[in-house]
Length: 253
Image (cartoon, rainbow, N blue to C red):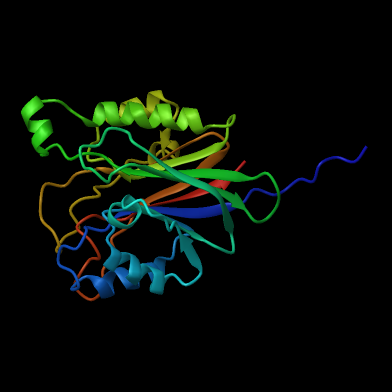
């Protein structure tokens, strides 16, 4: 009897990046374009996209594709790019996980590695509601806790049996929602390799504020984190965003 073909583990890089809507645009255009061309992650999950920034990234990432869909959230909130020579998309979707903002969703794609049959990874991104949102202030609730629970529930529902799953985004938090995700089986890329995450906001000197760790990359299932890194990227004297991009390298099972 012939055994099934075995495939060597494959490593690929992912990045999550809140690209700051159209604040200080088009001043930041060249910096964002430079980041995309130089860093060029295999998978790029974005928050706060707008048509202008997507047009810049489409031009700067000629070997990548992204989701095009009539739902406005894909062009005005979140989207996902992937390298077309490495992955093919076999499905995508959105799920309402209780964000206060009308177009925010859990955005996901199911990507199949082109190196052989059966190796897939589900990649999802979200932008949790900011603690300064009017509803959060009026109710005095951490609205990101139920949003994190909803992510776990939706990813459980999508899981076809131990599949490789990545979840990343601007979670606007570093405490209870992260614990909820960990209880749901997700491990952040820093803890998995024995590191502490650096601050992800603000990206000085482009933005100011209290340093926070609010952007995360997490995984579970048939994929293993190898490396996590918060990137300080500048073009001339300007960062592409007020957030820093977070990058990780994963290995398929």
